[in-house]
Length: 212
Ligand code: AMP
Image (cartoon, rainbow, N blue to C red; front, top):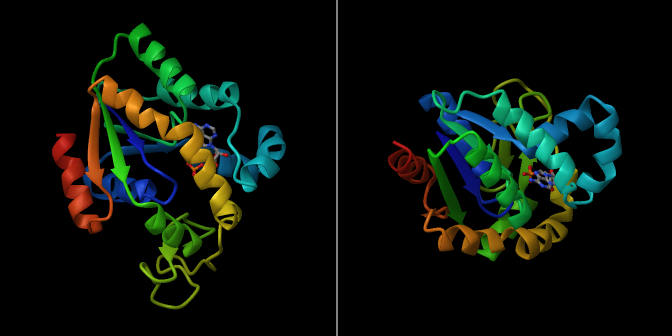
């Protein structure tokens, strides 16, 4: 099964995925994580995309599709429950993905939209902190580590993602190019909407229900 996670930055897609991977055997692929890894390991593409991504802008469709397609080709969609997080990000990407899935005759696709208000998104993103070692995310107010500024799991010193410092740019990009996807999938009668302001356990439970 392919499960497409839609939602504004900060809607909790990463945290929900983390729980589904840990306890329910899902596989999680985030195009954003792939780009961040490329930047960290200073690959030629990573070096090229560094500034653009850190300023909160979107990567071009061709590059992103190469990354997403490689991921899909390396997955066994018939056996795995693969969460695709961060792709598609606009209608053009959605059409590319649809074409690809049609070409391999794959139909078991769920599209979940995690709905959160703008006010909540701003608060979540500006307080988010990450562990540089394991990638786990915390929040200054909502998900505090046991020791301030330190990851519970490996002692990594928490930091703020550079693109979280450009929250407004990311929200604007989301509203302009990604939000129209909601109507796109609604028209196809494929969209599953989950209220992502519920507590995390309920969100995970609901996600499990719709993907069982
Ligand atoms: P995310 O972690 O999903 O917020 O992604 C971080 C950044 O990676 C985004 O702000 C974009 O610069 C880039 N990115 C990830 N996925 C895509 C995509 N499907 N299309 C364009 N840019 C993307």
